[in-house]
Length: 580
Image (tube, rainbow, N blue to C red; front, side):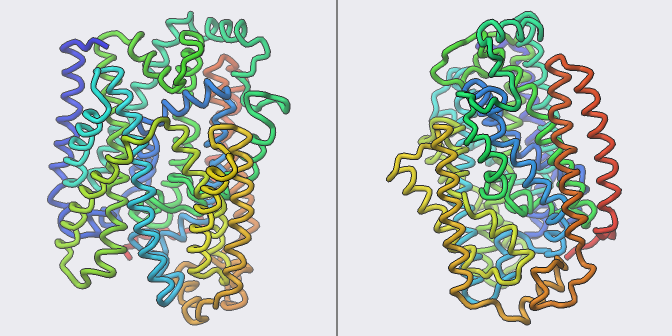
Protein backbone atom coordinates (compact mmCIF):
# COMPACT_ATOMS: atom_id res chain seq x y z
CA UNK A 1 0.00 0.00 0.00
CA UNK A 2 1.36 3.41 -1.00
CA UNK A 3 0.64 6.15 1.52
CA UNK A 4 0.44 9.80 0.52
CA UNK A 5 1.40 12.83 2.61
CA UNK A 6 -2.27 13.20 3.55
CA UNK A 7 -2.34 9.61 4.84
CA UNK A 8 0.75 10.13 6.98
CA UNK A 9 -0.66 13.39 8.33
CA UNK A 10 -3.79 11.59 9.54
CA UNK A 11 -1.72 8.85 11.21
CA UNK A 12 0.62 11.31 12.92
CA UNK A 13 -2.27 13.44 14.19
CA UNK A 14 -3.82 10.35 15.75
CA UNK A 15 -0.65 9.55 17.70
CA UNK A 16 -0.17 13.16 18.79
CA UNK A 17 -3.69 13.24 20.21
CA UNK A 18 -3.26 9.88 21.99
CA UNK A 19 -0.02 10.94 23.67
CA UNK A 20 -1.53 14.31 24.60
CA UNK A 21 -4.38 12.58 26.44
CA UNK A 22 -1.91 10.34 28.26
CA UNK A 23 0.14 13.32 29.41
CA UNK A 24 -3.01 15.16 30.49
CA UNK A 25 -4.01 12.36 32.89
CA UNK A 26 -0.53 11.23 33.98
CA UNK A 27 -0.40 13.38 37.14
CA UNK A 28 -3.86 12.31 38.29
CA UNK A 29 -3.05 8.64 37.65
CA UNK A 30 0.03 8.80 39.88
CA UNK A 31 -1.92 9.98 42.93
CA UNK A 32 -2.96 6.51 44.13
CA UNK A 33 -3.53 2.92 43.07
CA UNK A 34 -7.28 3.57 43.21
CA UNK A 35 -6.91 6.41 40.70
CA UNK A 36 -4.45 4.49 38.53
CA UNK A 37 -6.57 1.33 38.28
CA UNK A 38 -10.18 2.46 38.97
CA UNK A 39 -10.33 6.22 38.21
CA UNK A 40 -11.43 6.92 41.78
CA UNK A 41 -14.69 4.96 41.21
CA UNK A 42 -16.25 8.02 39.59
CA UNK A 43 -16.77 6.92 35.95
CA UNK A 44 -20.17 7.51 34.26
CA UNK A 45 -21.92 4.55 32.63
CA UNK A 46 -21.54 5.70 29.03
CA UNK A 47 -17.76 6.09 29.35
CA UNK A 48 -17.27 2.79 31.21
CA UNK A 49 -19.48 0.91 28.73
CA UNK A 50 -17.85 2.43 25.66
CA UNK A 51 -14.43 1.61 27.08
CA UNK A 52 -15.49 -2.05 27.40
CA UNK A 53 -16.59 -2.04 23.75
CA UNK A 54 -13.38 -0.36 22.61
CA UNK A 55 -11.34 -2.94 24.49
CA UNK A 56 -13.09 -5.83 22.74
CA UNK A 57 -12.73 -4.02 19.39
CA UNK A 58 -9.10 -4.79 18.76
CA UNK A 59 -7.07 -5.11 15.59
CA UNK A 60 -7.66 -8.86 15.76
CA UNK A 61 -11.45 -8.68 15.76
CA UNK A 62 -12.19 -7.72 12.12
CA UNK A 63 -9.61 -10.25 10.96
CA UNK A 64 -11.04 -13.06 13.11
CA UNK A 65 -14.62 -12.26 12.05
CA UNK A 66 -13.48 -12.32 8.43
CA UNK A 67 -11.88 -15.73 8.93
CA UNK A 68 -15.00 -17.11 10.64
CA UNK A 69 -17.32 -15.74 7.94
CA UNK A 70 -15.23 -16.97 5.01
CA UNK A 71 -14.82 -20.47 6.49
CA UNK A 72 -18.26 -21.02 8.07
CA UNK A 73 -20.53 -18.33 6.64
CA UNK A 74 -22.24 -15.62 8.70
CA UNK A 75 -23.39 -18.37 11.10
CA UNK A 76 -19.76 -18.92 12.07
CA UNK A 77 -20.02 -15.82 14.22
CA UNK A 78 -22.17 -17.75 16.70
CA UNK A 79 -18.82 -18.67 18.24
CA UNK A 80 -19.02 -15.26 19.92
CA UNK A 81 -22.64 -14.23 19.35
CA UNK A 82 -23.70 -16.95 21.81
CA UNK A 83 -21.91 -14.96 24.53
CA UNK A 84 -24.85 -12.50 24.53
CA UNK A 85 -26.54 -14.82 27.01
CA UNK A 86 -23.56 -14.68 29.37
CA UNK A 87 -23.26 -10.92 28.99
CA UNK A 88 -26.90 -10.34 29.86
CA UNK A 89 -26.51 -12.43 33.01
CA UNK A 90 -23.86 -9.92 34.04
CA UNK A 91 -26.22 -7.02 33.29
CA UNK A 92 -29.20 -8.36 35.22
CA UNK A 93 -27.60 -10.29 38.09
CA UNK A 94 -23.92 -9.53 38.55
CA UNK A 95 -23.12 -5.89 37.73
CA UNK A 96 -24.65 -4.56 40.92
CA UNK A 97 -23.03 -7.36 42.97
CA UNK A 98 -19.57 -6.45 41.69
CA UNK A 99 -20.19 -2.80 42.53
CA UNK A 100 -21.31 -3.74 46.05
CA UNK A 101 -18.26 -5.96 46.53
CA UNK A 102 -16.08 -2.85 46.20
CA UNK A 103 -12.84 -4.69 45.44
CA UNK A 104 -10.13 -3.45 43.08
CA UNK A 105 -9.84 -6.66 41.03
CA UNK A 106 -11.80 -9.85 40.60
CA UNK A 107 -8.83 -11.72 42.09
CA UNK A 108 -9.21 -9.70 45.31
CA UNK A 109 -12.81 -10.94 45.39
CA UNK A 110 -11.41 -14.33 46.52
CA UNK A 111 -10.62 -12.99 49.97
CA UNK A 112 -14.03 -11.50 50.61
CA UNK A 113 -15.88 -14.58 49.33
CA UNK A 114 -13.57 -17.15 50.93
CA UNK A 115 -11.30 -17.15 53.99
CA UNK A 116 -7.93 -18.28 55.28
CA UNK A 117 -4.96 -19.65 53.38
CA UNK A 118 -7.01 -21.22 50.56
CA UNK A 119 -8.48 -17.79 49.76
CA UNK A 120 -5.06 -16.13 49.84
CA UNK A 121 -3.63 -18.85 47.61
CA UNK A 122 -6.51 -18.51 45.13
CA UNK A 123 -6.08 -14.74 45.02
CA UNK A 124 -2.37 -14.93 44.25
CA UNK A 125 -2.70 -17.89 41.88
CA UNK A 126 -5.54 -16.34 39.91
CA UNK A 127 -3.77 -12.98 39.70
CA UNK A 128 -0.57 -14.52 38.30
CA UNK A 129 -2.46 -16.90 36.00
CA UNK A 130 -4.57 -14.14 34.47
CA UNK A 131 -1.92 -11.40 34.37
CA UNK A 132 1.04 -13.41 33.11
CA UNK A 133 -0.46 -16.36 31.22
CA UNK A 134 -3.93 -15.49 29.91
CA UNK A 135 -3.22 -11.78 29.51
CA UNK A 136 -0.05 -12.52 27.57
CA UNK A 137 -2.01 -14.74 25.16
CA UNK A 138 -4.61 -12.00 24.63
CA UNK A 139 -2.01 -9.29 24.09
CA UNK A 140 -0.10 -11.69 21.88
CA UNK A 141 -2.94 -12.46 19.48
CA UNK A 142 -4.03 -8.82 19.30
CA UNK A 143 -0.48 -7.73 18.54
CA UNK A 144 0.01 -10.55 16.04
CA UNK A 145 -3.10 -9.34 14.18
CA UNK A 146 -1.89 -5.74 14.20
CA UNK A 147 1.56 -6.85 13.07
CA UNK A 148 -0.11 -8.65 10.14
CA UNK A 149 -1.93 -5.43 9.21
CA UNK A 150 1.23 -3.32 9.51
CA UNK A 151 3.19 -5.88 7.51
CA UNK A 152 0.71 -6.00 4.64
CA UNK A 153 0.12 -2.23 4.52
CA UNK A 154 3.51 -0.76 5.41
CA UNK A 155 5.83 -3.67 4.54
CA UNK A 156 7.27 -4.06 8.06
CA UNK A 157 8.45 -7.43 9.39
CA UNK A 158 6.63 -9.14 12.27
CA UNK A 159 9.23 -8.65 14.99
CA UNK A 160 9.96 -5.06 13.95
CA UNK A 161 6.22 -4.31 13.94
CA UNK A 162 5.78 -5.99 17.33
CA UNK A 163 8.59 -3.96 18.89
CA UNK A 164 7.30 -0.70 17.46
CA UNK A 165 3.72 -1.37 18.57
CA UNK A 166 4.79 -2.21 22.11
CA UNK A 167 6.92 0.92 22.45
CA UNK A 168 4.10 3.16 21.24
CA UNK A 169 1.44 1.60 23.46
CA UNK A 170 3.64 1.28 26.56
CA UNK A 171 4.36 5.02 26.40
CA UNK A 172 0.85 6.19 27.06
CA UNK A 173 -0.41 3.13 28.96
CA UNK A 174 2.17 3.51 31.70
CA UNK A 175 1.62 7.26 31.97
CA UNK A 176 -2.12 7.71 31.96
CA UNK A 177 -3.71 5.09 34.21
CA UNK A 178 -7.35 4.15 33.77
CA UNK A 179 -8.64 7.71 33.22
CA UNK A 180 -6.38 8.12 30.21
CA UNK A 181 -7.35 4.66 28.96
CA UNK A 182 -11.07 5.45 29.28
CA UNK A 183 -10.91 8.77 27.47
CA UNK A 184 -8.72 7.48 24.65
CA UNK A 185 -10.96 4.40 24.39
CA UNK A 186 -13.95 6.62 23.67
CA UNK A 187 -12.27 8.54 20.88
CA UNK A 188 -10.56 5.41 19.55
CA UNK A 189 -13.85 3.49 19.36
CA UNK A 190 -15.48 6.27 17.31
CA UNK A 191 -12.47 6.44 15.00
CA UNK A 192 -12.29 2.67 14.54
CA UNK A 193 -16.02 2.33 13.77
CA UNK A 194 -15.92 5.15 11.21
CA UNK A 195 -12.92 3.56 9.52
CA UNK A 196 -14.53 0.12 9.31
CA UNK A 197 -17.82 1.53 7.97
CA UNK A 198 -15.90 3.48 5.33
CA UNK A 199 -14.04 0.33 4.27
CA UNK A 200 -17.33 -1.58 3.95
CA UNK A 201 -18.70 1.19 1.69
CA UNK A 202 -15.64 1.11 -0.59
CA UNK A 203 -15.70 -2.70 -0.63
CA UNK A 204 -19.34 -2.76 -1.75
CA UNK A 205 -18.52 -0.23 -4.45
CA UNK A 206 -15.99 -2.66 -5.91
CA UNK A 207 -18.57 -5.43 -6.41
CA UNK A 208 -21.52 -3.40 -7.64
CA UNK A 209 -23.12 -2.57 -4.31
CA UNK A 210 -25.07 -4.89 -2.05
CA UNK A 211 -27.11 -6.23 -4.98
CA UNK A 212 -23.94 -7.10 -6.86
CA UNK A 213 -22.43 -8.78 -3.80
CA UNK A 214 -25.52 -10.92 -3.18
CA UNK A 215 -25.71 -11.92 -6.85
CA UNK A 216 -22.04 -12.90 -6.92
CA UNK A 217 -22.39 -14.99 -3.75
CA UNK A 218 -25.57 -16.66 -5.06
CA UNK A 219 -23.79 -17.57 -8.29
CA UNK A 220 -20.83 -19.08 -6.47
CA UNK A 221 -22.85 -20.68 -3.64
CA UNK A 222 -26.30 -21.64 -5.01
CA UNK A 223 -27.40 -23.05 -1.64
CA UNK A 224 -26.87 -19.63 -0.02
CA UNK A 225 -24.92 -21.16 2.88
CA UNK A 226 -22.54 -18.21 3.45
CA UNK A 227 -25.47 -15.82 4.01
CA UNK A 228 -27.40 -17.93 6.49
CA UNK A 229 -27.54 -16.64 10.04
CA UNK A 230 -29.06 -19.93 11.25
CA UNK A 231 -27.30 -22.86 9.54
CA UNK A 232 -29.13 -25.81 8.04
CA UNK A 233 -29.06 -28.97 10.16
CA UNK A 234 -27.00 -30.80 7.53
CA UNK A 235 -24.74 -27.84 6.85
CA UNK A 236 -21.13 -28.67 6.05
CA UNK A 237 -20.25 -25.07 6.87
CA UNK A 238 -21.59 -25.23 10.43
CA UNK A 239 -22.35 -28.77 11.70
CA UNK A 240 -25.44 -29.15 13.90
CA UNK A 241 -23.34 -30.38 16.84
CA UNK A 242 -21.16 -27.28 16.76
CA UNK A 243 -24.15 -24.95 16.54
CA UNK A 244 -25.79 -26.77 19.47
CA UNK A 245 -22.65 -26.41 21.60
CA UNK A 246 -22.48 -22.68 20.84
CA UNK A 247 -26.10 -22.13 21.91
CA UNK A 248 -26.38 -24.60 24.80
CA UNK A 249 -22.92 -24.88 26.37
CA UNK A 250 -20.27 -22.40 25.25
CA UNK A 251 -21.79 -19.23 26.72
CA UNK A 252 -22.06 -20.44 30.33
CA UNK A 253 -19.30 -23.04 30.46
CA UNK A 254 -16.27 -21.17 29.09
CA UNK A 255 -14.30 -18.32 30.55
CA UNK A 256 -13.48 -15.81 27.84
CA UNK A 257 -12.21 -12.21 28.19
CA UNK A 258 -15.06 -9.73 27.86
CA UNK A 259 -17.70 -12.47 28.20
CA UNK A 260 -16.79 -14.07 31.52
CA UNK A 261 -19.73 -15.91 33.12
CA UNK A 262 -20.73 -13.70 36.04
CA UNK A 263 -18.51 -10.88 34.86
CA UNK A 264 -14.82 -10.58 35.62
CA UNK A 265 -11.58 -9.33 34.14
CA UNK A 266 -11.65 -5.89 32.60
CA UNK A 267 -15.48 -5.94 32.53
CA UNK A 268 -15.44 -6.20 36.32
CA UNK A 269 -12.77 -3.48 36.46
CA UNK A 270 -14.97 -1.07 34.49
CA UNK A 271 -18.00 -1.95 36.62
CA UNK A 272 -15.99 -1.36 39.79
CA UNK A 273 -14.87 2.03 38.47
CA UNK A 274 -18.44 3.35 37.97
CA UNK A 275 -20.19 5.89 40.18
CA UNK A 276 -22.81 3.56 41.65
CA UNK A 277 -24.85 0.42 41.03
CA UNK A 278 -27.11 2.09 38.50
CA UNK A 279 -24.17 3.25 36.42
CA UNK A 280 -22.66 -0.26 36.73
CA UNK A 281 -25.79 -1.89 35.30
CA UNK A 282 -26.21 0.66 32.49
CA UNK A 283 -22.53 0.38 31.56
CA UNK A 284 -22.84 -3.40 31.22
CA UNK A 285 -26.06 -3.05 29.19
CA UNK A 286 -24.60 -0.49 26.79
CA UNK A 287 -21.51 -2.65 26.38
CA UNK A 288 -23.52 -5.71 25.34
CA UNK A 289 -25.70 -3.79 22.88
CA UNK A 290 -22.76 -2.00 21.24
CA UNK A 291 -20.44 -5.02 21.33
CA UNK A 292 -22.78 -7.52 19.69
CA UNK A 293 -25.24 -5.42 17.68
CA UNK A 294 -23.42 -2.29 16.46
CA UNK A 295 -19.94 -3.54 15.59
CA UNK A 296 -20.02 -6.70 13.46
CA UNK A 297 -21.84 -5.90 10.21
CA UNK A 298 -19.19 -3.67 8.58
CA UNK A 299 -16.68 -6.48 9.16
CA UNK A 300 -19.04 -9.14 7.83
CA UNK A 301 -19.70 -7.11 4.67
CA UNK A 302 -15.96 -6.82 4.00
CA UNK A 303 -15.56 -10.55 4.68
CA UNK A 304 -18.26 -11.39 2.12
CA UNK A 305 -16.65 -9.07 -0.43
CA UNK A 306 -13.30 -10.79 0.17
CA UNK A 307 -14.96 -14.13 -0.69
CA UNK A 308 -15.91 -12.70 -4.08
CA UNK A 309 -12.66 -10.86 -4.83
CA UNK A 310 -10.14 -13.32 -3.37
CA UNK A 311 -11.59 -16.86 -3.46
CA UNK A 312 -9.46 -19.62 -2.00
CA UNK A 313 -7.09 -17.54 0.15
CA UNK A 314 -4.80 -19.76 2.22
CA UNK A 315 -5.22 -17.33 5.12
CA UNK A 316 -8.87 -16.15 5.07
CA UNK A 317 -8.17 -13.55 7.77
CA UNK A 318 -5.84 -11.71 5.40
CA UNK A 319 -8.77 -11.03 3.05
CA UNK A 320 -9.79 -8.08 5.22
CA UNK A 321 -6.37 -6.47 4.88
CA UNK A 322 -6.23 -7.17 1.13
CA UNK A 323 -9.49 -5.24 0.71
CA UNK A 324 -7.88 -2.34 2.59
CA UNK A 325 -4.74 -2.42 0.48
CA UNK A 326 -6.48 -2.75 -2.88
CA UNK A 327 -9.59 -0.57 -2.57
CA UNK A 328 -8.99 2.41 -0.30
CA UNK A 329 -8.17 5.78 -1.87
CA UNK A 330 -5.78 8.35 -0.32
CA UNK A 331 -6.81 9.88 3.01
CA UNK A 332 -8.96 6.84 3.76
CA UNK A 333 -5.86 4.65 3.74
CA UNK A 334 -4.29 6.74 6.46
CA UNK A 335 -7.62 7.04 8.27
CA UNK A 336 -8.17 3.28 8.43
CA UNK A 337 -4.58 2.54 9.46
CA UNK A 338 -5.03 5.11 12.24
CA UNK A 339 -8.35 3.43 13.09
CA UNK A 340 -6.61 0.08 13.43
CA UNK A 341 -3.93 1.63 15.60
CA UNK A 342 -6.79 3.03 17.70
CA UNK A 343 -8.47 -0.37 17.97
CA UNK A 344 -5.18 -2.00 18.86
CA UNK A 345 -4.10 0.56 21.43
CA UNK A 346 -7.49 0.71 23.15
CA UNK A 347 -7.32 -3.03 23.78
CA UNK A 348 -3.66 -3.26 24.75
CA UNK A 349 -3.84 -0.29 27.11
CA UNK A 350 -6.74 -1.94 28.95
CA UNK A 351 -5.04 -5.34 29.08
CA UNK A 352 -1.90 -3.77 30.46
CA UNK A 353 -3.71 -1.66 33.07
CA UNK A 354 -5.94 -4.59 34.06
CA UNK A 355 -3.04 -7.05 34.23
CA UNK A 356 -0.90 -4.63 36.21
CA UNK A 357 -3.75 -4.24 38.71
CA UNK A 358 -3.47 -7.98 39.44
CA UNK A 359 0.29 -7.91 39.89
CA UNK A 360 0.27 -4.84 42.11
CA UNK A 361 -2.94 -5.24 44.13
CA UNK A 362 -3.12 -9.02 44.45
CA UNK A 363 0.54 -10.04 44.51
CA UNK A 364 2.92 -7.16 45.27
CA UNK A 365 0.82 -5.24 47.81
CA UNK A 366 -0.87 -8.33 49.26
CA UNK A 367 2.20 -10.54 49.78
CA UNK A 368 5.44 -8.60 49.25
CA UNK A 369 5.16 -4.89 50.07
CA UNK A 370 2.41 -4.33 52.63
CA UNK A 371 1.73 -0.85 53.95
CA UNK A 372 3.57 1.27 51.37
CA UNK A 373 2.27 4.65 50.16
CA UNK A 374 -0.37 4.94 47.45
CA UNK A 375 2.10 6.72 45.18
CA UNK A 376 4.48 3.79 45.60
CA UNK A 377 1.81 1.34 44.40
CA UNK A 378 0.92 3.59 41.46
CA UNK A 379 4.61 3.61 40.46
CA UNK A 380 4.72 -0.17 40.85
CA UNK A 381 1.78 -0.35 38.42
CA UNK A 382 3.88 1.36 35.78
CA UNK A 383 6.74 -1.10 36.26
CA UNK A 384 4.32 -4.05 36.10
CA UNK A 385 2.95 -2.70 32.82
CA UNK A 386 6.39 -2.77 31.22
CA UNK A 387 7.11 -6.29 32.53
CA UNK A 388 3.94 -7.63 30.92
CA UNK A 389 4.87 -5.99 27.64
CA UNK A 390 8.12 -7.96 27.48
CA UNK A 391 6.41 -11.30 28.25
CA UNK A 392 3.65 -10.64 25.73
CA UNK A 393 6.18 -9.85 23.02
CA UNK A 394 7.54 -13.39 23.21
CA UNK A 395 4.02 -14.83 22.98
CA UNK A 396 3.18 -12.62 19.98
CA UNK A 397 5.95 -14.07 17.87
CA UNK A 398 4.51 -17.59 18.34
CA UNK A 399 0.87 -16.93 17.32
CA UNK A 400 -0.20 -17.64 13.74
CA UNK A 401 -4.00 -17.10 13.54
CA UNK A 402 -6.40 -15.10 15.70
CA UNK A 403 -9.24 -17.63 15.39
CA UNK A 404 -6.97 -20.38 16.67
CA UNK A 405 -5.99 -18.30 19.71
CA UNK A 406 -9.67 -17.48 20.39
CA UNK A 407 -10.67 -21.14 20.35
CA UNK A 408 -7.64 -22.23 22.37
CA UNK A 409 -8.56 -19.80 25.14
CA UNK A 410 -12.20 -20.94 25.09
CA UNK A 411 -11.08 -24.55 25.34
CA UNK A 412 -8.71 -24.14 28.30
CA UNK A 413 -11.44 -22.28 30.20
CA UNK A 414 -14.24 -24.76 29.40
CA UNK A 415 -16.06 -25.96 32.50
CA UNK A 416 -14.99 -23.10 34.76
CA UNK A 417 -17.96 -20.86 33.96
CA UNK A 418 -20.47 -22.58 36.21
CA UNK A 419 -18.39 -22.13 39.35
CA UNK A 420 -18.04 -18.39 38.59
CA UNK A 421 -21.82 -18.10 38.25
CA UNK A 422 -22.63 -20.08 41.38
CA UNK A 423 -20.05 -18.60 43.76
CA UNK A 424 -22.29 -15.56 44.21
CA UNK A 425 -25.50 -17.55 44.76
CA UNK A 426 -24.47 -20.80 46.48
CA UNK A 427 -22.84 -20.77 49.90
CA UNK A 428 -21.18 -24.20 49.49
CA UNK A 429 -18.71 -23.10 46.80
CA UNK A 430 -15.26 -22.62 48.33
CA UNK A 431 -11.79 -21.54 47.24
CA UNK A 432 -10.78 -25.07 46.25
CA UNK A 433 -13.80 -25.21 43.93
CA UNK A 434 -12.29 -22.43 41.83
CA UNK A 435 -8.71 -23.72 41.98
CA UNK A 436 -9.75 -27.24 40.95
CA UNK A 437 -11.96 -25.91 38.12
CA UNK A 438 -9.14 -23.82 36.64
CA UNK A 439 -6.59 -26.63 36.92
CA UNK A 440 -8.94 -29.34 35.62
CA UNK A 441 -10.06 -27.28 32.61
CA UNK A 442 -6.47 -26.62 31.59
CA UNK A 443 -5.35 -30.25 32.01
CA UNK A 444 -8.37 -31.89 30.37
CA UNK A 445 -8.30 -29.46 27.47
CA UNK A 446 -4.61 -30.00 26.73
CA UNK A 447 -4.92 -33.79 27.06
CA UNK A 448 -7.94 -33.83 24.71
CA UNK A 449 -6.09 -31.70 22.15
CA UNK A 450 -2.62 -33.20 22.31
CA UNK A 451 -3.47 -36.72 23.45
CA UNK A 452 -6.70 -37.46 21.57
CA UNK A 453 -6.40 -35.11 18.61
CA UNK A 454 -9.52 -32.99 19.23
CA UNK A 455 -8.60 -29.88 17.28
CA UNK A 456 -10.17 -26.47 17.97
CA UNK A 457 -9.69 -25.68 14.26
CA UNK A 458 -12.19 -28.39 13.26
CA UNK A 459 -15.85 -27.43 13.97
CA UNK A 460 -16.83 -30.91 15.20
CA UNK A 461 -13.55 -31.35 17.05
CA UNK A 462 -14.04 -28.02 18.82
CA UNK A 463 -17.59 -28.97 19.86
CA UNK A 464 -16.44 -32.35 21.18
CA UNK A 465 -13.50 -30.72 22.97
CA UNK A 466 -15.81 -28.26 24.72
CA UNK A 467 -18.31 -30.95 25.74
CA UNK A 468 -15.67 -33.33 27.12
CA UNK A 469 -13.70 -30.64 28.96
CA UNK A 470 -16.84 -29.05 30.43
CA UNK A 471 -18.26 -32.36 31.66
CA UNK A 472 -15.03 -33.59 33.27
CA UNK A 473 -14.16 -30.20 34.78
CA UNK A 474 -17.64 -29.87 36.31
CA UNK A 475 -17.38 -33.34 37.88
CA UNK A 476 -13.98 -32.49 39.34
CA UNK A 477 -14.87 -29.15 40.92
CA UNK A 478 -18.18 -30.42 42.33
CA UNK A 479 -16.38 -33.40 43.88
CA UNK A 480 -13.69 -31.15 45.34
CA UNK A 481 -16.37 -28.82 46.72
CA UNK A 482 -18.01 -31.60 48.73
CA UNK A 483 -14.72 -33.24 49.77
CA UNK A 484 -13.27 -30.03 51.22
CA UNK A 485 -14.56 -28.05 54.23
CA UNK A 486 -17.14 -25.31 53.69
CA UNK A 487 -16.31 -21.71 54.54
CA UNK A 488 -16.95 -20.54 58.11
CA UNK A 489 -20.61 -19.52 58.64
CA UNK A 490 -19.62 -16.10 60.06
CA UNK A 491 -17.49 -15.34 56.97
CA UNK A 492 -20.29 -16.43 54.65
CA UNK A 493 -22.81 -14.24 56.47
CA UNK A 494 -20.44 -11.26 56.28
CA UNK A 495 -20.09 -11.77 52.52
CA UNK A 496 -23.84 -12.08 52.13
CA UNK A 497 -24.44 -8.84 54.06
CA UNK A 498 -21.91 -7.09 51.81
CA UNK A 499 -23.26 -8.11 48.39
CA UNK A 500 -26.87 -9.09 49.25
CA UNK A 501 -27.15 -11.62 46.42
CA UNK A 502 -30.08 -13.46 47.99
CA UNK A 503 -31.77 -16.50 46.53
CA UNK A 504 -32.31 -20.06 47.80
CA UNK A 505 -28.60 -20.88 47.68
CA UNK A 506 -27.97 -18.79 50.83
CA UNK A 507 -30.84 -19.93 53.02
CA UNK A 508 -28.78 -22.59 54.80
CA UNK A 509 -26.42 -19.99 56.30
CA UNK A 510 -28.28 -16.69 55.87
CA UNK A 511 -32.03 -17.23 56.35
CA UNK A 512 -32.72 -13.49 56.00
CA UNK A 513 -32.41 -13.60 52.19
CA UNK A 514 -36.11 -12.98 51.53
CA UNK A 515 -36.69 -9.92 49.39
CA UNK A 516 -33.04 -9.35 48.47
CA UNK A 517 -33.27 -10.63 44.90
CA UNK A 518 -36.27 -11.79 42.89
CA UNK A 519 -34.59 -14.50 40.84
CA UNK A 520 -37.74 -15.22 38.84
CA UNK A 521 -38.09 -11.59 37.79
CA UNK A 522 -34.37 -11.50 37.06
CA UNK A 523 -34.64 -14.45 34.70
CA UNK A 524 -37.46 -12.71 32.80
CA UNK A 525 -35.30 -9.58 32.53
CA UNK A 526 -32.40 -11.73 31.32
CA UNK A 527 -34.57 -13.17 28.53
CA UNK A 528 -35.69 -9.66 27.58
CA UNK A 529 -32.09 -8.50 27.55
CA UNK A 530 -31.08 -11.32 25.21
CA UNK A 531 -34.02 -10.39 22.95
CA UNK A 532 -32.87 -6.75 22.96
CA UNK A 533 -29.42 -7.62 21.66
CA UNK A 534 -30.42 -10.31 19.16
CA UNK A 535 -33.24 -8.20 17.72
CA UNK A 536 -30.81 -5.30 17.28
CA UNK A 537 -28.10 -7.56 15.85
CA UNK A 538 -30.29 -9.26 13.24
CA UNK A 539 -32.35 -6.13 12.62
CA UNK A 540 -29.24 -4.18 11.65
CA UNK A 541 -28.14 -7.19 9.61
CA UNK A 542 -31.46 -7.12 7.77
CA UNK A 543 -31.03 -3.42 6.99
CA UNK A 544 -27.50 -4.00 5.73
CA UNK A 545 -28.37 -7.05 3.60
CA UNK A 546 -31.39 -5.45 1.96
CA UNK A 547 -34.23 -6.86 4.08
CA UNK A 548 -35.26 -3.39 5.20
CA UNK A 549 -38.81 -4.02 6.36
CA UNK A 550 -37.95 -6.91 8.68
CA UNK A 551 -34.77 -5.18 9.78
CA UNK A 552 -36.53 -1.95 10.72
CA UNK A 553 -39.22 -3.81 12.69
CA UNK A 554 -36.60 -5.74 14.65
CA UNK A 555 -34.63 -2.58 15.49
CA UNK A 556 -37.77 -0.78 16.67
CA UNK A 557 -38.75 -3.76 18.82
CA UNK A 558 -35.26 -3.81 20.31
CA UNK A 559 -35.49 -0.11 21.19
CA UNK A 560 -38.86 -0.59 22.92
CA UNK A 561 -37.59 -3.57 24.91
CA UNK A 562 -34.47 -1.64 25.90
CA UNK A 563 -36.60 1.14 27.39
CA UNK A 564 -38.69 -1.42 29.26
CA UNK A 565 -35.63 -3.29 30.55
CA UNK A 566 -33.98 -0.12 31.85
CA UNK A 567 -37.21 0.78 33.67
CA UNK A 568 -37.73 -2.73 35.05
CA UNK A 569 -34.24 -2.99 36.53
CA UNK A 570 -34.35 0.39 38.28
CA UNK A 571 -35.78 -0.87 41.62
CA UNK A 572 -33.03 -3.50 41.99
CA UNK A 573 -30.11 -1.07 42.21
CA UNK A 574 -28.95 1.82 44.32
CA UNK A 575 -28.47 5.13 42.57
CA UNK A 576 -26.59 7.17 45.15
CA UNK A 577 -22.94 7.82 44.34
CA UNK A 578 -20.79 5.52 46.43
CA UNK A 579 -17.07 5.12 46.97
CA UNK A 580 -16.04 1.93 48.70
